Image 1: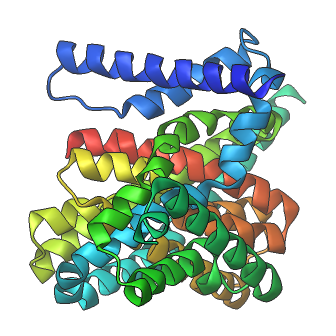
Image 2: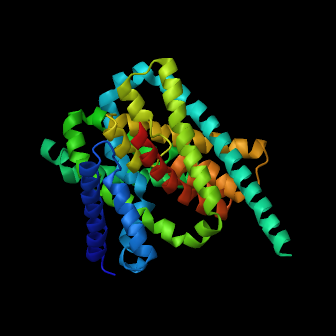
Image 3: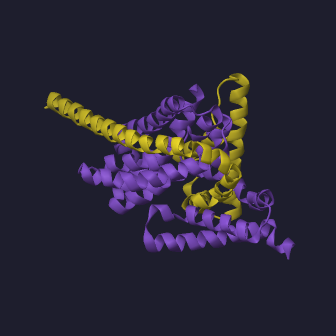
Length: 131
Length: 225
């Protein structure tokens, strides 16, 4: 489908998400879910229920995702503005990042393995019961 | 001459040009540290320094690119829908891995950050480091963090993960593509996903889904902070 229309659909979901965020923070002032994430969940629902066919967003959305990191360039370059803050805390930030990589990886790998193990045990039990 | 060198068109042209160079460099080397974003950023910084343009003017020139961050997050629904069959098959491990990835990363920041005495702004900036960059930016700004530090942190985290984790996978002889995909996707986002794809196709698919789930989990967990 045409690029302009795809862009329109994606932006409509973006705006829908922002509206929902406003509604939520009006109802529950302490709760904040990014509007963009809500917009993504709305698009997800619309695609899964086929209210919006995949081909109506595929090319534009696929382009954005395939080239995602390009859109972070402005923020990455603006690091220059904060060099003094970064420098002052650099080793602490790096320490947190590197220990975080190890901790998260082992926690993720361990929990995923355990989950899959339990799943297969449950599945086997269910099969045994049926047998 | 100054006018041509500093305009929104020039900013975007330069960003595209240096990004293309970065893509070529990464395709040739496959080194996570030389990912297109990092190469383009360093070249643009060098450009600012060599030409001697005012940094804040140059950042305004680049700011047009920001407009796409929101639509980009919304579009993350697309890869999920495309892999929905695989997600249904492995829903529980994917959910568990993504939430554990987001939660352990946030807890590490809070615990170590407080021990090391980091101030609130820095803590808020690095808190969503396990999340994919666009969502991390949103969470960080909401918590009072600095966008630039968040992007730097997420990128360093992703590169560190993409370098360290494949080694851990080898050392501990991890073979299961689901574990590999989550181990990389829930910790190193897109750069980790590129690595996961190099290891195994299923691992790459799991990783590309895990990075979205981890981002959403980070946004949800951040509500309670």
